Image (cartoon, rainbow, N blue to C red):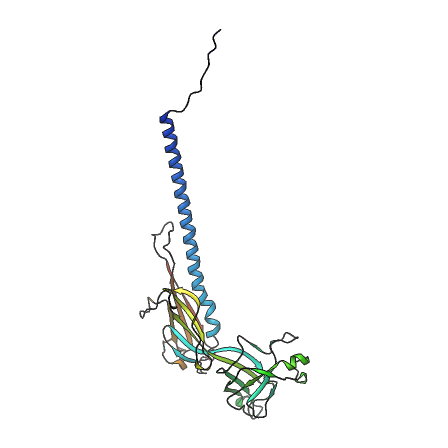
Length: 305
């Protein structure tokens, strides 16, 4: 009896070409989706970075500028891209006053009670300024005020005894600090008077050496000698004398809202920041290109009239 052997039929060339073309179409469509997703996520990341850059202005500037006094001549210099001002750096209370009234002892910053009697951003040093509360000659409030005195030396160790009530241990008493002034304290300044510390500081839109980007820079100027500018926020658009194009602009206004160029009349400061994404944005529904945005922060100064 003859047996019929059936053989399995293979693919024809046409079928193989069809499958290859189909696989190519599916792979191409998949790759296009993946590329679009990657471009979308990259663009989203750039947009988030842009908005974070703008929000940094709201975190960096207001806390420092809000302490500026329009009546206290706290603004030393101002322009459309920078401001030099008196920055509040800390405060304390006087424990004792030296015989010449050119020194005062204040409690240390670390106390077992965790009370912030002495607190500062950076320790007062030569070139800083102190405002010391002056109770005046009478008990009336009308003759009270603040005596402005220059600080002429870095802090040294002093003694604020536990009997003063500001320290509770011998270690705290012996770790107290002595402040040296260039002007003698007036008679109305007594132990217990509050002392506030200030330092000249500067914010400026600047371009670091060797960089093509522009940043909000900050420097401190104890004794009139400024440290190197350091970036604190950015990057922003480059500086331009045209207000609509510049990356960071300060606008100074008086109590009526009018723009002023007189430091003693400044009641509020508008800070306008502008930035754009680092790369072109690819988003559905909008043409490809760089995305720009801006933020306006308004800071009202203290003691404004």
